[in-house]
Image (cartoon, rainbow, N blue to C red; front, side, top):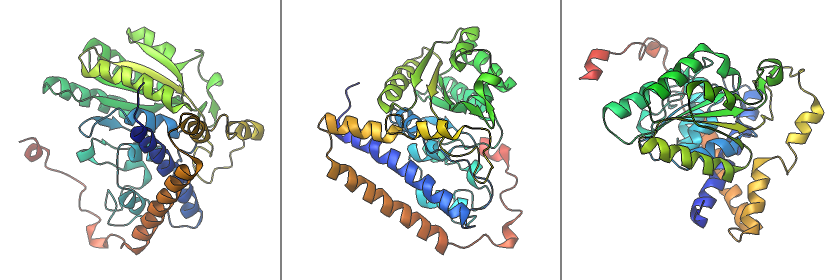
Amino acid sequence: MNLSHKKLLEMYETMQKIRQFEFQTAKSFAEGDVLGFVHLYIGEEAIATGVCANLVDGDYITSTHRGHGHIIAKGADMNKMMAELWGKETGYCKGKGGSMHIADTELGILGANGIVGGGFTLATGAAFSSMMLKTDKVCICFHGDGSTAEGSFHEAMNIATLWNLPVVFVNENNLYAVSCRITNGMANENTADRAAGYAMPSEVVDGNDILAVCDAAKRAIDRARNGYGPTYIECKTYRWRGHFEGEPENYRNPEEVKLWKQPDHDPIPRFEEYLKDNGVATDEDLKAVQEKVKGMVKEAVKFAAESSFPAKESALEDVYTDIVEEAR
């Protein structure tokens, strides 16, 4: 790929936003400010960043329970995200949805999802609407390795190919479906092997190499946008934290976790080396980006802390919607 220096630095900033936001979320959760469950994206930043770097505002994404990275990479407001995690009325869902339900339809973010495999049919539906309305919008369906065992996965894959839908399935294979290692739950070597059953092109990439992810995503997105149908991309990666914050995490070897945190595995130092080796940025430039993002995350915490909780009287608001009226 031929990416400009500006684009590369924007991608680096996005990776920093995701990681720093997530570390702050872990801290806020431990201090009791974040309400409900949180599933952190630390270690997987290259995937959301590399994929979304190829999207435009009108394109769609569907996310997962581990969705903060996807949402930030698609351009969401970190102030409103943090406020939502804190249960404040200034959040994306007015403090009522929490970590697993953040959405912004104006940005094409069709929502994080607390249901494993819940995004598959939403993504194919969004892609179907794009086809029927004759737009060039593409939908990205982010999902984890464990969700490929769900029936909705197979249904969506089949209909996507059958109807030649503009959807790209992006699998974030972090090796564990909650506490079950993938080798204990799937006979295939790769989740991408399953795409062959639906005559869908597929590709396996190093999910911690942002340029490899970006390149694969560009091919798939261009293919979908130009009417050639769906693609399946498997990104091999690793989550640094437990399945959710606060779990005992007694199912992983500590040495394995330590290995994936090393600079030659960590997607951010790997990208930093590329930027420096290719004259895109100096250590000082990278430090400036880190400090800029640090300030943004600090501002997000301040925004959340100073916002109010929803009024009790609003508990039954936004529960139902007049679908008929919305469809007019």
